[in-house]
Image (cartoon, rainbow, N blue to C red; front, side, top):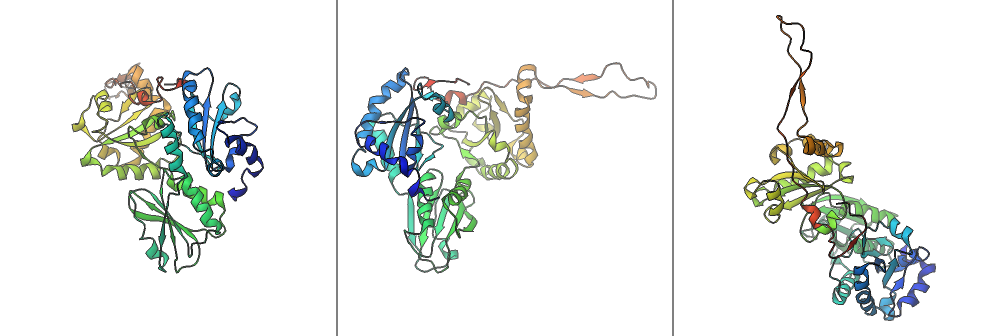
Length: 410
């Protein structure tokens, strides 16, 4: 689909509203009109919320910086009153006020705006996201194989390979737009002036620094290009940092973490490969993460461990923490071990063991020639009791000092 016509009929009412210094009210009726803008900030709030009231004048002042005719056609600051638009806010999964979502060309970004609530911070964020983030390289007539060696980046990389740089080429237009959508997840390179005919996309994985896939675009439309790129830019395993901890915990899914130190950092690749290949379904229910155990020393203390015990694997359900008893090297030898750990969480086994101790096993009594009558009751063998600590990472979720939490599930 060509996004130049996306939401065209509903652009003008919002354009004139945004041309003034007033933040645009968004309702269920005009919600799709935001699809034509390059960058949209949507503030979901309620008048009774203290933090929403504090943000309101700052947000309005920030919008003034983009009220000139050029920016007004590219940028929209919108506000949704969730008291009046309860169905819309429920559909958007709003669980706290204020929530500020980012929308580009009608696509809602997974990452919310979580930066400082100041005018300079909002302005800087929007200006940065208006920039073209695609690195353009001239292939000088080389073939595709040679062109693939031109892009070098520490991030997962998407390369658009085109015989010529023709901005009327719909594939290039779509590639540029998807680059804006996925700018935080991948690096993008547009390599042109190639000897080989046909438009292509290539994906290079940062972890292996190798080209993983190449595809011919043929007659691919925007949705096809977006789908192909998005699937490859979705991180199978994310690196947990203090910068993204709130974002990750706000998703409300349990965390399965590999804590490592410099000596065991090489295990991240094996962990990634197992999750990518053998835990496809589990990725829909749980966040798989790696974390620097030196930086995140506090969770180790709660597990009764120190940096000398690294590496280790645990699950934080955002209620309790469960440490896997086996060494990481042994866990990663067999994908079934990690898979069973997740199944034990989902089945409630880990939770039951927290409250009642390790589940018992029944030992079948031996029947000898002297006594062929088995005992009346089986003999139970108790395993040692576990004592998992409470979740540490729930404390990194959105703070009551910054948000009004609607559904305090943690």
